[in-house]
Image (tube, rainbow, N blue to C red; front, top):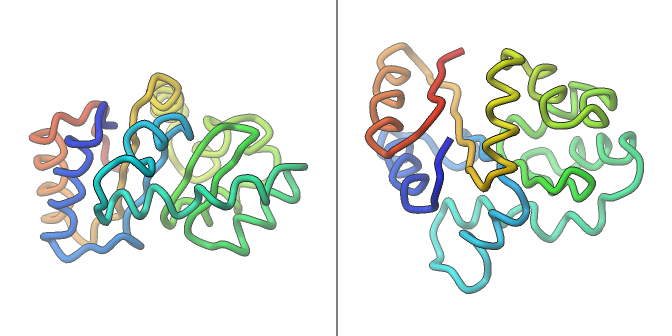
Length: 164
């Protein structure tokens, strides 16, 4: 979890330098955080583009959890969930669709737990997102990459760095 755009950008660059691309990276933040750090008035970057992918989708999604699930599945990699005030981008968006309507109607913690994140960590992420944090993650291809990312995220002032 990152507290500002510059620390998230540094970590994202470390992923990119290791051969990972935006479709490999999960990013979760509140819509308010997206507007603050990645809105129209901010610098254009690849991470900023990823944060903006779901922004225009939010007004089209609304409605029931079932409609939200269908929209996530249709979009595939990025979605705005206006009922929860979240922007979710990356492979986890599809995983959250698989978590089912109960996960989404139960909030972010239920959806994250349904996608394999331990409940105590999911609760920390939810609290951090509510307080303006940017949660970023990636599924490393090997143990060497996992160690590298853990070190690089910490160097980039990440908080709550976990391996699953």
